[in-house]
Every structure is written in C-alpha cells, then in structure tokens.
Amino acid sequence: MALLTKWGKKRVRELSFPGFIKKLCLISFLLGVSMMVAKVTYLDQNEGHKELFELRLRVTELKKLLESKTKITREIPEARELGRNFNLTEARKGMEKNVTVVMFSHNEDVSCLKSRLDNVLQEYPNIKVIISSTKTIDIPFSQNVEYLPNTEKEGKALATMIDKVKSPYFLYLSSSVQLPPQNSDISVSWLLHALEKIPELDFIGGSFLRNQTGARYPVLEVPCYRLRMCNWTLSQTFEYRYSVDDMMVCEETSSSFMGRKKKVIELGQFDSNLDAMATTDFFWRVKGKAVTGLRPEVQFTVSKKCFPPSLPAATEADLKFAFMKKYELYIVRDNFKREVKALDSKHYSSLKRNYGYNYNRDGYFASPMYARGLLLDLELAADFLESKNISYFIDSGVPLGGVKSGGLLPWDVDIDLGFFYDWKPVQEGLDKFCKEKGIPASVKSEPLGGGRYKIYLRAAGEFGYNTMYQQPAKELNEKDLMMYVYIHGRKYPVKTYLFASFRVMYGIKYLEMRGPRGRMNCRTKGHHACLPSEFSKGGGHWRDYYCEL
Image 1: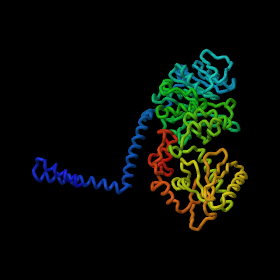
Image 2 (image 1 turned 180 degrees about the horizontal axis):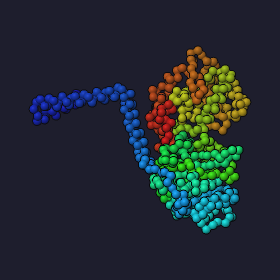
Image 3 (image 1 turned 90 degrees about the horizontal axis):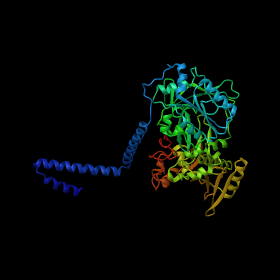
Image 4 (image 1 turned 180 degrees about the vertical axis):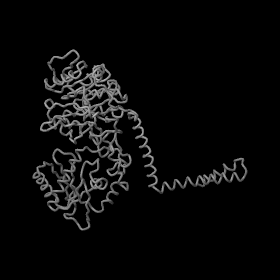
C-alpha cells in the first residue's frame, strides 16, 4: 500500500495540471487502491463469498451450455398445421408413387411373411416392396417385390434396404405388423400426408393394435417415447414434447414408421452391427437433429398368430447386448418398466472388463448392480446382528449417503460396519443365517491386529462387499451414544459424533465430497454415467442426478 502511494504521488506531480486537479487525481488514485485492497482482504476473509462467486460463474456457464443445446434442436414452427384435408383416393396413388415399403422378417414363419406381403399389395397393388429375412424363404414374388435373403441382423437389413430405396419416402414394417385399410381414417396414408404437409418433419409412426391372448378386445399402444441415458441405464418413457394438431412430437416413434430417405443418409444409416434395438439406436443418434412424430389414429395391426413369443431374460439380454455394449449400458428399461440387464447375458463379464471404470476416483456412478448388492449385504448383516441383539453401527460413506440423499452414495462400492462382539461366533452365525435365508454368500475373516478381526460379507453373484469391523469393546459402552440414519427407507444406527467424523475424513466441505485431493472429476466428458454435477458431486445436490445428454 505504501509503495503504491509513493509511486502514485510521484506520477501525479509529473502531470502538467493545476494544483487542485493534481490533488483530485491523487485522492482518486488512493481511493481506488484502498478499495482494491479492501476487496482482496474481504475475499480472503470471506470464503463463503468466494464460493458464491464461483457458483454464480458455474451457473452462468451451465445456462450457456443449455442454451447452446437448445439451439441445435430442430423444431416445427408454431404456424404449421396438419388438418384432415386429404383425398384418400389420391392418397393411394401418392403412396404407390412416392413410398417404398421395406419389410424385415426375423425368423418369421413363411405363412406369416406371405400374409403380411399379401396385405401390403392388397392395399397398394403397385407399390414397390423390398423384403429382407434372416433365412431363405421360398415363395413366389411379384415383379414389384425385391427380395434380399440371409440378412442376419435387423440393422444391416434396414441399412441395405434403404440404400436400395429410390423413392423420396420409405415405410418400414417390422416383423408381425400389417397395414390398416388404405381408405380409412387409420390408414398409413395419413403418415405420408404429415410428411408432405410439414417439411420440417423427418420420421413419423403410428399406434399398434395388438390382439393379446386372453384379452377380450385388442389393446391399443401409443409408442411415442422420450429416451434418456443416465447411470448406466437407458430409460424409454411415454412422453411427447408438444403436439401439432393430432400429431405428437417424440424422440422415438413406433418400430414401424415412415421417413425421408434423404434424412437417413444425411444423419447416418442404421447400425449394421445391431439386431435388436436397431431402431431405438437410430432415434437416439438423431435426437435433436431430426423431428420425429407419431399420429396415434394411424393403427398398425400386430398379428397374435405371428407375433414372436416372449423370450427368456437371458436370451433377450444376448440379443440386446450389442446395443448395450455400444453405449456402455447395464440396464435397458422400457415404457412398461420392464428391465433387461446385462447381468442376464453370458457376455456380461466382457462388458464389465472392457469398461474398467474406477467409480471412487474417476467420478462415475457405480454400476446399478453394486447398489443392489450393497443393500442386500447391508440388510443381511443388520438382520443377523439385530436377531442376536448384537450392537452395531454403520460408518464412513454409507451414513454420509444417508445424510446427503437418504441412500447410498452414487459412487459407493463397499460398506463399513462396526460390531461389538467376538468375531468368531459372528462369522459362523452369519454364514449359517445366509444359508437359512436361501441366499448363498461368501463370509470370510481377516485379522485387524490386537486380537480383533474384520469380516467380509458378499452375497453370491452380487457386487461390492460389506466389511464388518470388530470393535475393541465386546459390548456397547455408555459413552458410545447412538442415533439412527435412514438408508433407502430403513433406519440404521450410527454414532452421535457422526458429523465430526465427516469433517475429519472429508473436511468442512463433506457435503461436496471434497477431500485432500479436491473434487472428484469425471474421466469422460459427456458420458451418461459420469456424475453430472460440477458443483458438488454429491447425492443431495439437486444437480447430482440430472442426466440429460
């Protein structure tokens, strides 16, 4: 401060101004220096102010990022209208002139494929049809039908057939699907009408009318979906972004749909390596780059006779594994909350090995399989100890997760638990308890020193483990006051000096999971399983479970 003042006085004296102006300049200079020093001192003494300033900067950056994402999303202008002014007689000619039907047969019965082809040609006799199948089918084809045999995967079949399409539009019919009557309000001609009426629209599908075994009436399904990837999971939910007259705007439409050939070539063909989920993969990749719609009144009929039976979980997982490996997914969850897990697949071990992420240090969500395994291990240990009236407490990251979010930390891969009893009867009793429950488990011990042991508990086939530490005392002392913390709806005992231990382990910023090494950073930007919040990386912060790519 003194040096700055001396330097300032010298510079002011050198100015060729009257005396009072020189004094004003000097006063202004000194005032500015004083304010600058005061501001630096204030920032140094007020850590919270610095953090608030840092947070505001990050919020600004986040807003800019979200705005940039919004700009690349294609939309239909509000002024666009569909209406129902359409001549169905002319529509038939328009379909035959401007649309090519592409059909894929996945191990379909020959009679079913022939029935579906007859249905198409009955509604539109002069339309061009391209058929691909997983096996050679020996049936006569008319002149306007092109047949491509022995195509093993749906993605490759779609890519090959669309390459051969010469019309501006294509209509893809997946296995077991038939067309509605062409001269009706539910005709696929209304899909062409939408594409011609709204040039911004790229792909459009319709509802499915399914004849289900045991159902008195057909079931209507409206497959207008939103797609999200978060925490190693793809979620498909029934949501549409907005509507234009009687059309929904979605992120994924029905698996049988109409589209512009030019747009497929522009955005990238269907993935030839994928069999199941080839269309879902395509709609995920064009999300934000194309406009996808669904006209629910248009109804594709799904034949009960030709519809393939439900597959065992392991078989379905094998079929979808290529898609799951491509996006590094462990779970695919559909609109009906049905899940296919990579764990059900014989390829799962290679998927786990190929990912090779260190959840604790690289800033990733732990695999959903870890959470399931950890909770099972924790419940088994708690059930056994409580049944024997043995005092215990949970420690380290598990109660921190309870404080932050009422559950496990999203990156946790182990559990720490302390118990007050001899280790030998606990190990033997826990092993017997798991067998009686019908849950095979590994129960091992290892010396801690000083005559104490720790016990490792892991349910067979699960991930993560529960480390149970024998405490120096065999019984809970009065000074060891306890309280409960909720973990996923169940209360578990913790020591009352819990928060002091958090400060020791993680520092004053334990809610941000800041330790001696600073914040955890995600190794791969844009990865759907990276902990998305750059603010806290913790379970309770509202940004922490926000995954929207």
